[in-house]
Amino acid sequence: MRRPVKLTKLDEVNQEIIEKYRRALELEQLRELTINGYLWKIYTALEHMKFKAIDKVTKEDIQEYIIHRHENNKQRTINGDIIALRKFYTWLKPDNDFFEGIKVKQPKNYLPVEQLITPDDVKKLLSVCKSQRDRAIVMVLWDSGCRLDEVLTRNINHIQFDEHGATMIVKGKTGMR
Image (cartoon, rainbow, N blue to C red; front, side):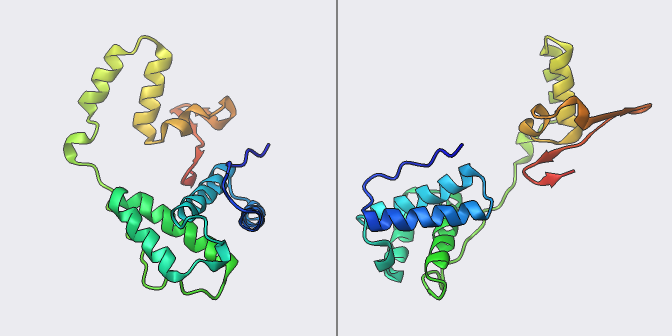
């Protein structure tokens, strides 16, 4: 079931182009959430450009929008904006040079040592668990390094028991492992 993001204030021409782009993204078999995210980022850019006709947007418009986004947003947000707009304008005008010289700068991913969970933290957490189920979930998360969603969406057929314990088949954001 498709729940499109509501893009009000678009004229008919812009709305038609956005719908064609939506279909192109669906053909790429992207998730609905991803598609809606891309469309929302395009809409936000158009809103900043006072809903200028999509096919009349210039390189300078894009650059000005990205500079504007740097004023109030974090690098990850700006990266997402650049990626979404680059993907859209590459689809719309394959020979454009709108993003020449605009780089996606990935922020460093790290946690300070004091924010890492230690074995003592896990023991404290286990001591306040009220049920075997809760203790099992904590231990599976600790032992596997999985994301919470990856553990909670498992069914019994994803777990294989043997004489040493169990093996869990995980399929998540980073693929199957």
